Amino acid sequence: MTGDVPLRAAWPATGGQAGIWLADQHLGGSAAYNTTVAFTIEGADEAAVESAYRRLLECTPGLRVRMGLDRQGDVIQWIADVDPDVDWVTRPVDPVQGPDVDERLREVVARPFLTDGGQLCRLVAGHTPQGNVVAVLVAHHLVNDGASQVALAHRFVDALAGQIDGQVPSRYVGLVETVRKAEHRARSDDHEYWVRRVTARGLGNDAVDSCPIVDRAGSAAGYTRGRCGVRHLAQVVALARSTGASPFLVMAGSVHRALTAVGLNPLGLGVAVSVRPHHGRDDDVVGCFVNQVFLTATPAPGEPFAAFLTREVPGWREDLSRRCLPLLDLADDSQLAGYAPHLNRFTVSLRRAPEALSWRHGALRVSAELFKRYLAPRSDLAIRLIQRGQQLEYDAEWRPSLSLQIAHTFPATLDAILSGEQA
Amino acid sequence: MRESSLEDDLSTTLPAVINAFRSALGVDPEELEITVDTDFFDAGGNSVRAARLVAQLRAAFDAPVSMQHVFTARTAGRVAAVCAGVPLEQLAGGQVSAGEPNSL
Image 1 (spheres, rainbow over the protein chains, first blue to last red):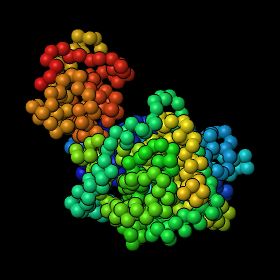
Image 2: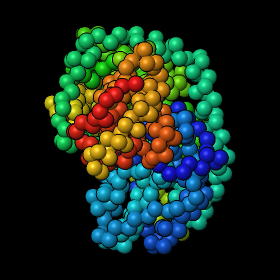
Image 3: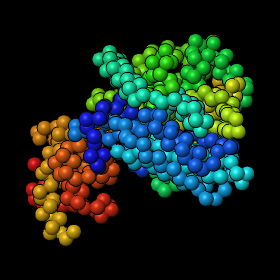
Image 4: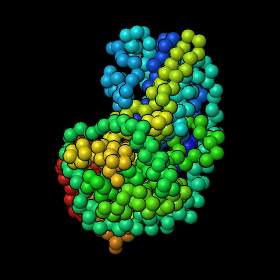
């Protein structure tokens, strides 16, 4: 950070957090890591919404976390005082619906956070023509992950209803320490495993030269949201049963398969995974506790998809059991210098979402949408799978550097693989 | 900033920047000669090492050097110019030379 770091009150970031911080710095002033929870609120005025947001910050230390560099160049974090950043737009806005945030709110939603020492969340709100409030809680990924996003939605509504409980900072700090210990163990136990895994496929010329990435500076990033039918999820579940994979690994395998089918020839996929303890007692702690696991795969021309999964899934399961080694360590490993640019090119994540979140407290009625689209891509091609009951949706976002032909072909290809039409 | 003043400042900052490059990259002088034109990332730098470089530059110059400065400036000469107070936008696309010697 460019200001004074309160060193006595600071402690190290986890490897996963440091990786996101550095990736954000590399993108430089981007909204790529801005996460959103969008609320439609009936029965609360501006003062009540602002008061609830202040109370949310007071009671949620993880939302007050800031990050920067210490004197050794390590990423550190500290908890700042409450300083609510609330923007009201004056023009009427639409109620929350669909993957996009209302365009009148988007400018503030997409405003990059100053991640080098600045605060990492804000609230932007407006009124609908019917007099309801639409409020979008924008949090940088550094302070919010999948588990946290659900907790955030509940906590903001609790704050609106005057029922929020306070989270003590020691829970956040304790979870950071738990994750750091797991990362420390992984550095001694799993590092060589990962070097072998990443290098196993080899970095031949084909991996570099056949990737049709073109330089189209200035053109816009791409985005599409696909909605699959019930048969897609049934196909995923059937394949999971027959190959011994989890449904998520079948989905990840489908993405890898689709990337290969459109000629991108990926060395592997970066898969976002939680590193919170499995017992689940810390899932309500607001913060970011994730890592990215690099799942390598070797495609074989003509191989049926089920055979591909049967061959690759045992390795992927082993990879996921060793999920705590920060990807950052691999990116900085001199043995993997040639591989580092490939580790974050293609990413996939899965969110399990309820059909809708809604609350009612007396005259207060609130609904929330947790899965608004991201506003900028974080990798060459990022796939976010969203499972809503028996429905499967996906967001695909790509950088302008990705060939347009591939970007436009990919969603249909993924759809065909997920549905079983293309084996 | 006048050119002569910039050159004076660079002659002061460049040696320290080159030392910081070497330290952040973890290389000895015998392994890699670092000059005014050495690109930090072409020389093996990455985000982790850029963070170390930024920390060292902040300590050495008491200047608000950011990761963005390093990602944008890239070469030792341009980073030295940033540390000497030259705005990034003035460096865009241009070469910054501190004259001889250009390596340590």
